[in-house]
Length: 317
Ligand code: ATP
Image 1 (cartoon, helix red, strand yellow):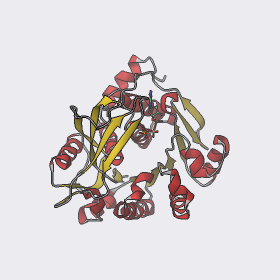
Image 2 (cartoon, rainbow, N blue to C red):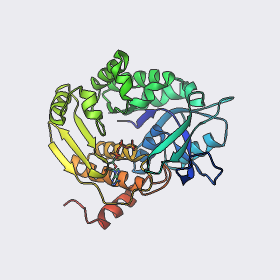
Image 3 (spheres, rainbow, N blue to C red):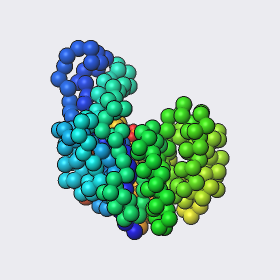
Image 4 (cartoon, helix red, strand yellow):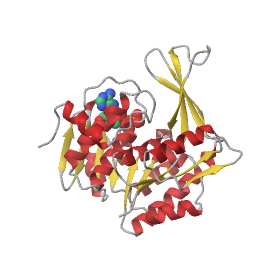
């Protein structure tokens, strides 16, 4: 089947170089770095060797060009990224607190991403897609939400598959619309990629075991739980439970780990690898992402992942 396609926001990230002072004092800044969860995800799909495309919109500016050219160079089909005159590419400014926590100043609400539409190019890409990856966060942008719903319907009608990263803000789930949105997505999801408490929130249940059984009962083929520096776990009826410990690395910048993990897992499974091997690639992709400053700077190709796995003595027989 055709390429993995996603729909969503593209932006740049610019980082403070001080800790604790925020942006209250002038300082050298780091960046701009290409960013946006859907962009990071699709870049990792392409870098590990999968066919990949994205429906998105950027401004007619350097930030947009920086992103599009990176994605193009890494092998992503950028034909459905529209350039919007008169709207800027979105940006996120990151500052660090003394305890290591991060705060973001987002300029996205009025950026070109809000002008993402089902253009002829988007329609053409989606008509060829074999898989759609959906991020819960993308539903916050109305134009993007509509395209996602259409893309999911189109791909499923042609026998394709859907992955869902339910990174929806908890407050959204408490209101009826957010809950409905999650339930509608769960009904068509083949691969669910939650992290933290998203598994319990998605299922509306209190324990991991109950949540997994409920979600598999809905017809979801595979659930892969991301556990940060504790690694990851696969659950399915076909393979049961498969745990994969994390690689031990120094975390420099956590942004993008979950997206690279999901992309590496999905692409490995689409290439026919069994869950244990796909988890290994996914953990390696997540680990390599956190070692580098910049959301998309740690995205690895397959050879780099193979070397990393071998160097850690983690090859599977
Ligand atoms: P984010 O929202 O920050 O992109 P996430 O919460 O969706 O991430 P995480 O569980 O943080 O996802 O990370 C995904 C995977 O990346 C983990 O399952 C793990 O394999 C790897 N990973 C993340 N952080 C680390 C770390 N500090 N050390 C080693 N591996 C890590």
